[in-house]
Image 1: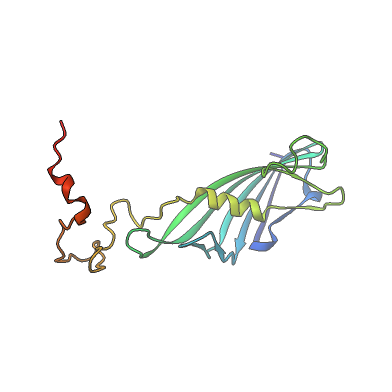
Image 2 (image 1 turned 180 degrees about the vertical axis):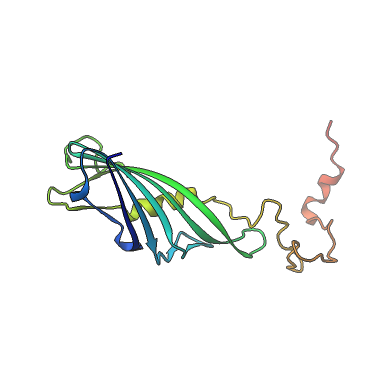
Length: 181
């Protein structure tokens, strides 16, 4: 590890690594993205600072950026509709290159072409992608969440209800008599 720089408290939309500080080998940057106000779809929001560690390897015209990100996300439970918070950790790798003639450059999301006049690498999208990929597709406040009663809407995690539990859609009633061996 040649360099180790701390560029803390950077606004989320300005997450850039200056090329002037890169030398051959590996450089490590510690960043703190403040005020992200990042929404990643229904019921998923990051408004807390995002801690970022970027390991940047520079060899010739290629720059490999390996990110480790961590932030507290705010979610809406898919079963009981309650807001909850959870720490999310994610990773991403992106290869930046000045040689845009290579096969596949521009076709893959993890390989990006840099302009010959580039002075910095923007990692904002990579940080967003690392968080997005680390978030579960099913948001649950806890694994054993009981959800809401389908009749009265009571949150079964906090209260019980007196709704009938064995109501079966009449269209499925005939299946009760089915005997399987």
